[in-house]
Image: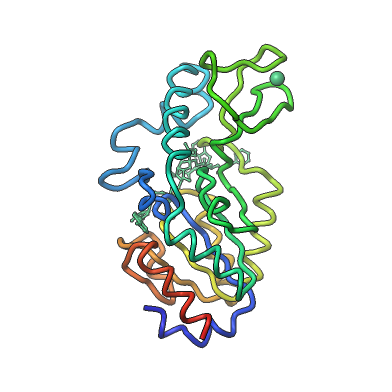
Length: 239
Ligand code: BJW
Ligand code: ZN
């Protein structure tokens, strides 16, 4: 699969992965767009915006609570594990749009969560932020300051965490190879990262069973799933 870029891969010092919902699909976590995607069943604007949250916090919280339970019951798949194992041979950075924590659970040590984490909550008013440990006694949960707590994720119209975003740009600008895995690249600003990498001379490789908005910009497109394709990377880098 990766033979045509074998030399580039073995010479590369730093490999950056930009990942999206598709990498967790084989762990049983649904994607957003596409035929079995969440946005087919739910209206994004009624669940993933701050206005929707204030309009119906209980509904939004129930959706996140159910997804969090599904995510905690899921396991990283061979795609996540291959990326984690690549750290034995290369500098690896993971810039993920996913909120599921599966890269970290697979063992990746340098993960930048562009859209936050479903395992963390934060206050809508004060600076309180904490990892969720058990079940909530009521939804929406309340902060000690009495205001509502919300999932620590980035909704439409909200800025990405600034330190994470600036680090992501630095990593994109300084890698030799960028893998774009399991993302439709429909959402900005994350979809700018491959452009930054390319402008700085990196080669771009896409792993996605479907064509995406940026397939034409890729140096190589692997039309396969991530759990099938990514383990092959190790055998090439390891040669
Ligand atoms: C496989 C596979 C297998 C399947 N193997 N592959 C104001 C209002 C409204 C919008 C905006 C606004 N200002 C700016 C915007 C633009 C907006 C945007 O991009 N909209 C587009 C949809 C048009 N962006 C934003 O709002 C962002 N914020 C922003 O720009 O702020 C500006 C600002 C600056 C300063 C101050 C204030 C504001 C924020 C975006 C946040 C996105 N949030 C979500 C929800 C997160 C929480 C949650 O999970 O509930 O993030 S939306 C959703 O989409 C989620 C994902 O991370 C993101 C990307 O989706 P992804 O990962 O690409 O998934 P899919 O489903 O699209 O694709 C899956 C792919 O996998 C497919 O290609 C499959 O083929 C493939 N696949 N199986 C490999 N086995
Ligand atoms: Zn508070």
